[in-house]
Length: 200
View (cartoon, rainbow, N blue to C red):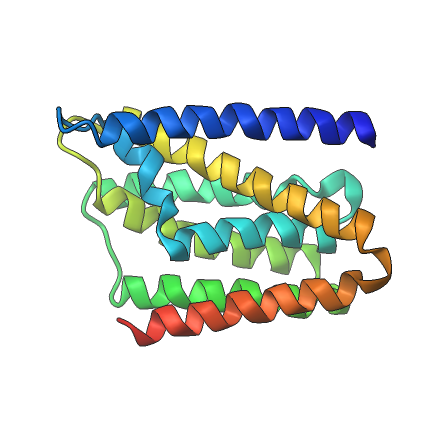
């Protein structure tokens, strides 16, 4: 476990440096590349909370050998939705639905003990990811989708990884209070989702 933690911390550090480099490039005043725009876009609070929640939920609700299924499903349907969004496809009240997806993920965390059927849980993750993808795709810069998508996928992967590490930390070091802590985090995320919804 120590070796895993050290490797995880090192990976997070490397990812943080890469993201910092992208952010620095994006604010130089000399133009913003599509890649840098992609790196920045998932840091909107709704996107950020959703991906952290998926990582935490996956560790908490899925079998240990299937914990990667949640982030994988989100990433797959995120890029699918983004590709559709880049063509101009959208749905009514998209931003409202994205805010409510944060509420949904918060509820999934609160109800972790209820053990949702895996297909149902992953289905909700996939649906929400498609909505987030549509929003990403709608912001595709004129200089192309591919580099922009690479940027937001990298940041999304880092955020999911952060959620997984948080879930592992809670399970490992807060063993007796894991359920309470996960529920409290879920309530906090759900409340944030309602707040975001109220601001639209």
